[in-house]
Length: 101
Image (cartoon, rainbow, N blue to C red; front, side, top):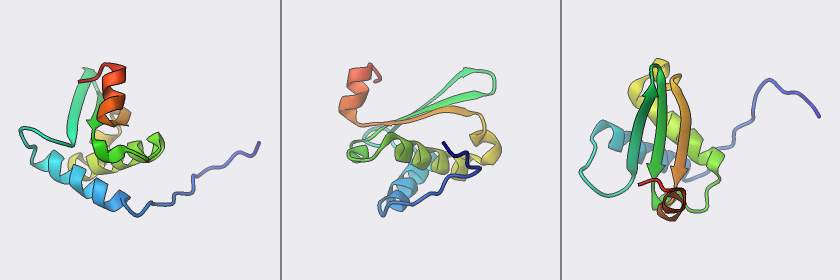
């Protein structure tokens, strides 16, 4: 199997819209609705991000994670984004199955 030093990214058409909506929510959180963003800090220098959102439906987990990390980095900066060890996008039904509320 080949070893590569970079991953070729192909942005899906809806990625920019989803990323922009997450950026807006991170900057000015609403009291209710989606996207529902949970930011956990389980230990020093570690951040877990969970985003419950029906609009994830049909997108692979890697794409969801990339959108979440890009949005978080845009709002918090690259140094803070380096602390993220989990970035998981879940539809409401996926979150329910995993026990994430």
